[in-house]
Length: 105
Image 1 (cartoon, one colour):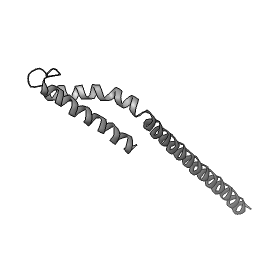
Image 2 (image 1 turned 60 degrees about the vertical axis):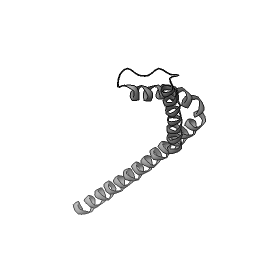
Image 3 (image 1 turned 90 degrees about the vertical axis):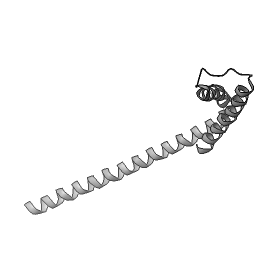
Image 4 (image 1 turned 180 degrees about the vertical axis):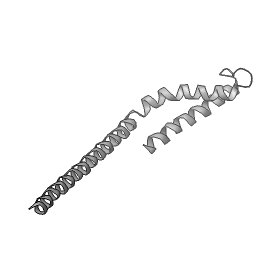
């Protein structure tokens, strides 16, 4: 997951540099008034999103598979713990009944 995030940030940083160069060279329009920095960031986000969607498809699928495996493992562990607790509760109830019978006899 960290790898995907870093790759996504790298694509954004590359787009940011390219957009900054285009705006400052006059090839891309400047923002209104003092919003030039915000304009550059928004334009870089707009450009980097579809690039990331296409270029990082395989990495995103791998990250998704890892997350799904972790969640399945966590669910299995939770179910195993729940089963152990149920077994312990059943044993405690059985011992309680057995000790109650011996006291009343």
